[in-house]
Length: 66
Image (tube, rainbow, N blue to C red):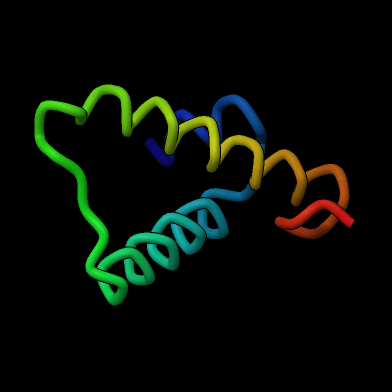
């Protein structure tokens, strides 16, 4: 997914991977998961989330819109 986020947003590779790692670590600490049958839907939603966060960063310098 990191490659696709970089491709569509141009956000630095290292920062893209750091964002994905941060969210994955947070989800693990919170014991979040999803049923395997929902994998495709979850991946689409995560791709949309990461792309939105990346675009915020690229255009506004912050992951969260101000």
